View (cartoon, rainbow, N blue to C red):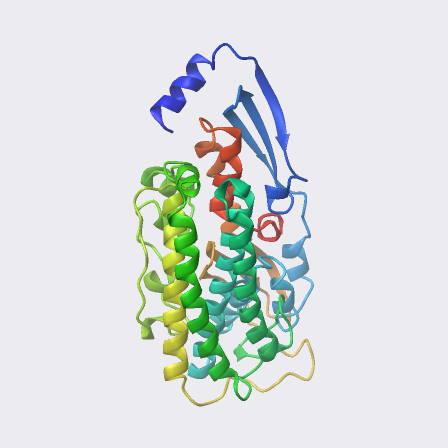
Amino acid sequence: MDPEARKVIEMGYGGAERLTMNMGPQHPSAHGVFRAILTLQGETVVGMDAVIGYLHRCHEKLGETLTYTQYPSIASKTDYVAAMSSELAYVRAAELLGKIEVPKRAQYLRVLVGELQRIASHCVWLGTWCMDMGGALGGGATVFLYCIREREMVLDLFEALVGARLLYGFHQVGGTRYDLPAGWVQTCRETVDFIDRRIGEWEDMLEDNDFFLARARGVGVISRELAQEIGISGPLIRASGVNYDIRRAEPYSSYEDFDFKVPVETAGDCYARYRVRMVEFRESSKIVRQVLDGLPAGPISSRPGVKSVGQVRIPKGEAYARVEGPRGEVGCYLVADGSAKPYRMKWRGASFSNLAVLPHIIPGHKVADVVAIMGSVDPVFGEVDR
């Protein structure tokens, strides 16, 4: 915490009486159903309690009642802004347990949709974050509309690929459910080229805006030590100076075949988290182009299509698989008993772990900064409450 902010908290704020205030779960910037209980002295936040659980949907128990064939479509509904990432974590855990090989083409297709999903997810983050910070930016709503427009183009690609725009069921144990349709590759190239050009426009609108810089720089600082102690991941930990990305540290789905940069910033504030994600936009586009250039021929699954939802059985054992989602580490822990369903399942949601840092970095800031800090964390509450 900033020393001046700590001094305010310890000495009081001009003798002002402390006030407890609810922010959410119905607040527009609560990103779903998050409730923050703020303790205020004047306009300064001196304490925060994070209350979650309003969106609980029993995903982990559902996973124990559905077969390995059925559940990937349900996994989409955890982080519904990045459904491809959650699906992949689940099927990778099952594949590790069953020692199931995945064809090279399917691995490349997984990388392809994963990076397109990262682009689409970051579009939602940037647009809603600017909207959260409001009209003071002089263009918050404009950036939101631009980002949603570009996201729609990625969702058009997903719709052409799987027939759905939000929840996909694309991944399956042993490979992928669909291959690329005719003309899809050319449309994909045009889409990422178009979005790459737009990223520069977004940066010009924001980085030349004094209001945006004032609300992002030096706000919500997460030190390197705090980031590692709390266990945050993804853009948050990389914005605090930790060069860690699962795609590099523990490559999966042939990520070792691709050339990309892992962006790292050291300031640890809202602006650093913004810069990390802006670089990730372009790096994801670069990976997409590499996949399209080098996409191997061959099957998209190591097993034939199933005739029954209970046909896929995994031998006894346990495994944990993780992927680098747009918000950080998404992990799935499975315990198998030899049947067609997992015996136990547990999710490690990036949003859930990242939220733990908020009570450490919000005190000392003004009420108006709360929405800016929370938006920079980019939580999705389907993944938090599960």
